[in-house]
Image (cartoon, rainbow, N blue to C red; front, side, top):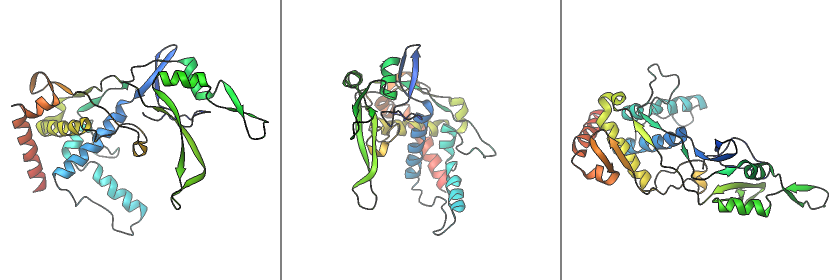
Length: 274
């Protein structure tokens, strides 16, 4: 899930939604979120392939501004990543758009507006506080059951105290977690003309990134360090470019078309390292 920018009155963290029609919404993974996750992993792949351990970094004890400048210097350092995903820095003199486009991905479910309003605003009220003087908003059993039928459930968590390792006082929070939601296919398109001289090396980097996505190494969405973001990829299909017919990713990475592509990738790494 991608976390919504608004906080619910009952559930603290809500998944981002988009409208299906006038009376229904569905969960959504924005294209920018998908592209950002793939870019971060593509940088990891290229730096690993280049054994890049000398990336610009500030000296210990440097000021926050110096650390920020050193980090920003790394953002557009990798030429193929930049060609594929675009410039990361807004202040770059030769800022360019990337050749890769990620479309918005929506879930294969529709949530009625009335149900979503109950889940987000606590339209159904029940329960009392300790003194019995005030009624607190909670999800009713009927709302919980309907959300469960759609593959979502409210889960309560407590933040950990960094010093004691125990539960932090007053840090209980809840999340509406999609745990059994199916999604439309993630659709990516690459403008091979925009890749220019980096066409073959860019395709190789994209294939390696997609391979790791299929192997579960690239989480998507928010809270990935808290157990969210796992992706179960059933199949990746490529169409166009070097492949005259649609092929699966394993077939593309073992077929005859891959030889000139990987050769360009090896030449690029050797040239950049020299």
